[in-house]
Each structure stands twice: as C-alpha cells, then as structure tokens.
Length: 226
Image (cartoon, rainbow, N blue to C red; front, side, top):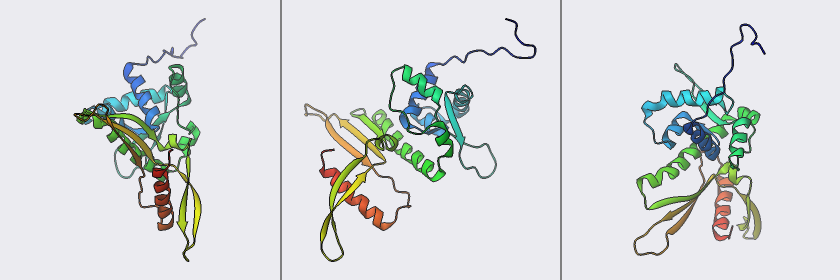
C-alpha cells in the first residue's frame, strides 16, 4: 500500500531498560517529578536535561501522563508524571499489579494541595528507599504509599473522654500517609531487627479536634494487630 503524500512514516518507539525502570518507579510512587526520578536513580543533577527528554518521550508516546505544577516567574514549567493507561497495561503484561487508583483524567483534575501533599510524602518515602545505600545493614522490606493504603483502610475502636467525664467507644478509620517495614542486621543476633514506621505528614492544614482524633486513632492502631 502506498504511503499518502506528505504523511511521514511513523516508527515504533523502542523502550530501553531505563524506560522500564522509570515506569516501574512511577508505579511505586504514583506521582513523580523530574528531580524525584533523578534522586531515585542516584543520578547527578547535571543529568536533568537527559531525564527531562526521556520523560517527555515517554509522555509523547503515551506511556506516561503529565501535568504542570504551579509556576511563577520566568523559566520553564515543572511537570509531574503519572502512568497512563498504556503504561499501566504494559506493566500488567510484565506481571505488575497495584496501580494508582486515579485514572488519567482524574490525575489531571487532582487538586494541587492534595498533589503537593503526595509529592511531600514521596520525598519522605524516597529517602527511606535510598537509606540502605548509605547504611547497608538496613533493608527496606516493604513500602506502602497512602494511595495504596486507602484501598485497605484500618478501622479501630478507641475510648474517648467526654467533657463531663463519661467515656464512649469511638470507631475511627486509619489511613496513614505511608508505611515502612525496615529490617536491620545486628551483630550477635541471629535474625534482623524489625522496625515498622507509620508516616503521618501534617502540613499545617489540620485543626486541633481532627488532629486529636488522629492521635487517638494511631494509639489504637499501634495496639491493634492490623
């Protein structure tokens, strides 16, 4: 069949090992900026232009979705990336599961304060992921993002004291911002020491009453077997 005049022949976009690694990282953290990808791949900040080109190529070829972050002043806008449907399907074919609960259209409508919170959570989780690079005795056995934890919320019953001294049982849903399971090799111990950390990242947006309720909930959560 003849190619139509003036229409360039389209060629397939060959995915590299780096492309697959980036797609897997976006799957793990749900939303990533260029700087966060650089940190996760332990690259120099001088590599930023190359990483930007690679991410844009994945976006142009429909493997990633993106949206710009609020931008003030001169310079280029910064983007945040998430898996597109095509990217999710590719990773599913490779056996991956546990994808973001947000569809691409929802990602584009996601309110910035929530997106900003997700990026701050990612900064903490990225530091946790990279910790074993500095301390080889420590391993991160498991990491859960709050967007993953929202799929399996934990409900605890805690006692709440009323103003006049009465006490009532209160059922509270607990969804941490992150959950980390660390293991550490200790000299003289046959098994590694285990420490689980629950992350609650407050950016000054929670009033006193809900904050106290969160503290009660985490106390009950710590005592539960969940």
